Length: 331
Image (cartoon, rainbow, N blue to C red; front, side, top):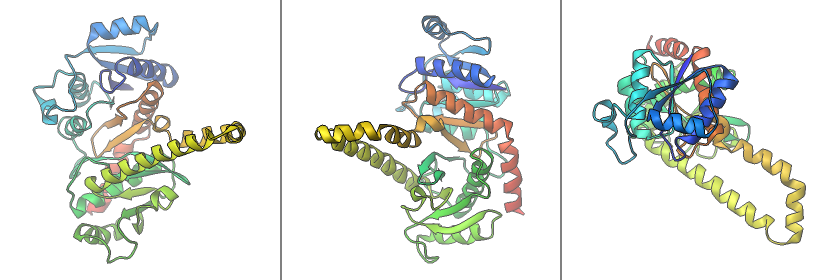
């Protein structure tokens, strides 16, 4: 199994990508292809005292930046670390791809270079998020700002397959994110999507409100990319708010500091469930290959776990299962 890693994507490149890749190669026994400036990568591997027989380097020129036109990944920026990785994926020289680089460029590359599963309208960015009962998937998390009802139906099917095959949730509960649980709530988009999902071969539980997914009300929360991205950023912000508030509480006086010492283990366990590094990244669902978007500030652990996601994606035949499930919807 060959997994391409964009070694120069993200805030902590290339060192954290390199360390995570070497870690994953050793722990999971996968072959890693690092894309980026070859001289720089070889120098950093040596400086970090890291080496491995499962690590290969493919030379690339530069990095596609967030401010660049994401469409340039196809031509003008095809020689960058992300562009080269997508070429490896499209040519069959890599089986999966992980990057913490530009989300917009990754979506374009996944759609236009790696290619879509037959029949998929648009791939969806699908972050895995913590809830009171484990994890749930949000899709679309921002890849498609404007969606049609049939796209939301496909997102529901793709997310259901992923949560079953990768997160080991039997018969995942799929909810349509809305402003109320009643059937008549929402825009035309939600009203039409609701009818489509009711007849789909998924465990559709109807409309869910914004508070429901995080409280364990569903395993897959489906919405358009605009709403999904606003929801995602709001949840991330609330997590930071809670962390800040807890720090203030435990630093109030000697009594609260002592309370922290007694609560330290439980707090750390709770924080771990909220840590994106433990999950790895957000899959771009609907592509012919495994494409994983790691968080921009990913460290070595996050990269390692993103590579684990990619490995599981391939080993468990997720693309085949998605193709099969989409065919059932089509028929």
